[in-house]
Amino acid sequence: MKKSIEKFRIVLADDDLDDCEMFDLALREVNTNFTLEIFNDGKDLLNYLHTIESDLPHLVFLDLNMPFVNGFQTLTEIRRNEKTKDLSVAIYSTSSSEKDIEEALVSGANIYITKPTSFSMLEQILKRVLEMNWQFQKNRFSKDTFYFRL
Image (cartoon, rainbow, N blue to C red; front, side):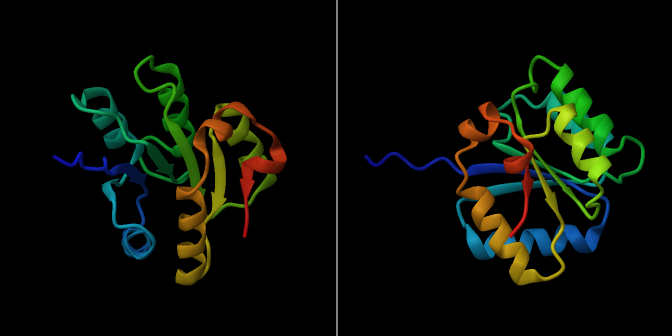
């Protein structure tokens, strides 16, 4: 009997519904072996991560500007919790502010991605991010490899 290949579990936390839809569509174009959970704020994401009984996601995409609990607060809580501290977290934001990039790096994000302006660029980014060696990304932090650009 063939063993089925495990689906790559992805979570997106973003309050912009259009961005969520575009992300989902682009992800489907570059990879079909995934599951995607979408949360519209950090509070709901944290509740999910802390109560999930099954396996945690492989990768969390986290917007910075969300209501209730913003991306930085969410990231801090993820890193504080024993259960979630080792999750791979990609900041996925419209901000390209040096201050935000620096704060995300210091707060423990694995990578910082500025939201692209076109669907094709988003597809390219997602393809490259999903092909990354996340073990390397977790262990070799440097500002040069942290800020992801095409």
